Image (tube, rainbow, N blue to C red):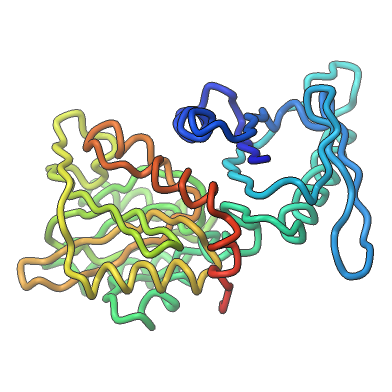
Amino acid sequence: MILLISGNCNEDMSKLLFNYINNKGVDCCIINHEEIPFKHTITMYPYKGKLCGSWLINNREVNLKDISAIYTRFDSASLAEENISANTKIQIETERQICFNVLFENIDSMVINKPKAQFSNFSKLYQSFIINQYGLKIPNAIISNNKEEVENFIKTYKKNGVIYKSASSERSIVKKFTDKDFKKLDLLKNCPHLFQECISGKDIRVHALATGETFACEINSDESDYRYDNNRNIVPIKIPKKISEICVKLTLNLGLYCSGIDLRKTNDNEYYCFEVNPSPAFSWYEYQTGLPISKAIAEMMLNAHKYKNLAVRKF
């Protein structure tokens, strides 16, 4: 059996994968994680060094050993019970998340992607040190809540400009720092922020798989964050073999079976890497380019026995 777990059963990535896998006649199920554990019962226990147990899914008991692959795309789950206090809800969510972490880290299945493998993305600066080891350039950056240090950084890279964004995996809008933003620097005392040197060039998104496949597209936009540009143009492209191989190797060594890698190609044909996303919204790119990303991920899951031991976390 193959499980597709997301925060919404109508979420596009899960639907694309389900349609392909189901058409192949393989047992597959989409699970809304907000319904766990209310509509599903999970039992787990260690036995002879392996995680054993069962999962009651839609009134059907599934042995954990019969699950060959799991795709996960988690959001914060909401608890519908009105008679539970706020503190109790926090405790329930914490316990539930621990349960998921144990399950997905230790089940003898392909999991796209395991919790520990996603940790590097919790800090963009930490992840940049890893990225740089693979021959991809990284922008000069600083994380600080010291106003003077940030002002000095902005002055140093005034020629190319500076952008600012979330330092964590929390979604944020990338913005270019302008003179009007200097008055906001007083807010740094409340929270450190990430500032990066602007890198001129073309945005490239690469979806890399443990199978060795990569799917690249170029995004033409005049905005600092092309996701919020209604006039953007996205086209599929071929990237150099060396860059493709680096993307796959980086993905595997982060312990990921699938990643979304954000690159920028300069006019000097240098490749900078901003981030390796361990839970990429690949459907957004697939719909606009026709790249068969979901098919490739589904095929990887259908052949989990071939690939499940390839992604080994080294960081």
